[in-house]
Length: 270
Ligand code: MF3
Ligand code: CO
Ligand code: CO
Image 1 (spheres, rainbow, N blue to C red):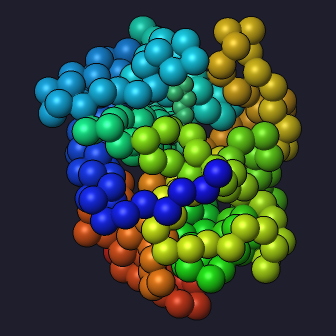
Image 2: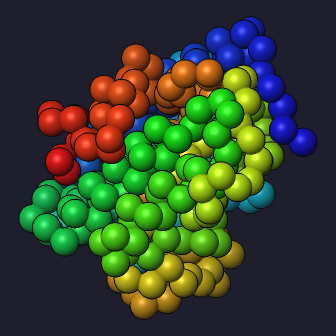
């Protein structure tokens, strides 16, 4: 069932999103060679709890940690661990929190310490996929408009769009209806309405989109062992451009022009 959120509920989702944005920015600043993903996990949990929130991934269907930390060929749902990050690794960090009963969900990817241009391009293309999808996330459009925009851009680089996992509705539950695929046919699928809250979360692979799940029951890995990038925000659908609940003050139109060009200074790709 798709729910439409009222202004009181949206205000709570704004607060959860603002907290999550601060947490992810704090994590981003910590990332460098030698740091462990366990350190990032512990920091995320502390920052969320200190602000009165709950790290909602921890204990979710038995998931052990507050963040998902997925390195290189790990697509999503990697467990934080004590391994030291190495320069040139592609790290995705995904975090969810609840504040006052309402969820937010956001993820980013980085090349640890830089210096891996192929992985860097994958990270940047994945971000641009997100913005192109978000540009389509307007009341009256359909879910297929979002998926098509993401897919067309990713595939123009020869990259694979992960099929097995999708964005989703979000509210008091982390995962609500509808599914928000990163592939699709423009003009098809559920029609977007003002007051819907969804995530858009492209997972883009350098090679094949085919994946498998590790024996730990969680970690999703590419079948060809090539790297994968992930980027995610929680959005409110409006009659105009979507509100980025997990990035207060940011607007799609600040990042990308109506003709789909990244605006200089925001994204790295032109
Ligand atoms: N944050 C993930 C998503 O984007 C889900 C996390 S799964 C969990 O949907 F087990 F870590 F909670
Ligand atoms: Co997420
Ligand atoms: Co999500």
